[in-house]
Length: 377
Ligand SMILES: *Cc1c(COP(=O)(O)O)cnc(C)c1O
Image (cartoon, rainbow, N blue to C red; front, side, top):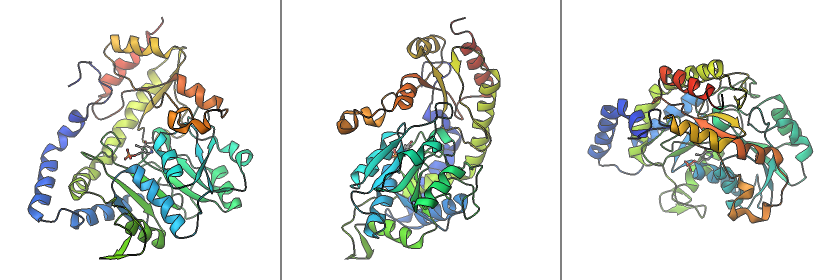
């Protein structure tokens, strides 16, 4: 247990309401005698595909592997080639970029919008090069990053759209996809999900999934995740072992029915923060459609961030930073260190996330807003 009165995120607290169902789910797997693949995985995949509105969902080991398997599948299918470039927001979590470079592809970093924190789709055309063959849109902090500008840009240049949906399960875009869907994970050609314990739908360990309407892609992802085999002991690709663990699948099946309720709670907390935080030193996120976002994080921008975090900690409020160092400034990407990405660097130096989970009550959110309003006053 955290010592703070308002911890940033306490996973024990948020899973406590599910303890009975989770223990029953684990017992079901133990008693089944089937510990890789099996009915729990198939049932969770069916539930996730239905929730997302796609024809296929393939359970995999984690969110990074979901992204890697998508890119590697497109390469196996000849729809991408090593050396192709992929546009990606410069202020994303590094896993988005790791998946691109691990697949032999080159990231083209595009600046975010300083107010929405999502990729600034008005910058796509200027960032276009002949090598770009795909765009990895990231629904950062649970806010859909899909609009008319992005969809028409991708269509005009024949780009594959991959969604990094690790933070946005259950969100809806204001702009429908060409198929008429709005749910994130159904908007592009393929999408990656993460069920890392801190995500909106969190497993009790690592887990992830790929969704798509493309039968060939789904089949390729599933084969690559299973040693590259299409049938037992018959390997058509040099694959990996990136399967979804059935214990995690059983946990996720138990929790998925409550996701909408939890999202509604996050939206209520966001609405409280939006209406009650009023301090000229603290900038709230700009969200046109607060009830389409799923509020994985509620991210403020504050110039005096260190002082603000210390003040909040002194007043019992936990915070976190998503993310302090952008991918192009990480030691592993020294080749990109000289890129000029001022919006990304501005955000990296100012963003601070405040509590927004089922462990935070509406009364807590009002108290936190009051504490924030007394900062520097
Ligand atoms: C969490 C996350 C990932 C990686 O997911 P893992 O399951 O932790 O591998 C990828 N992209 C984004 C935006 C994430 O937040």
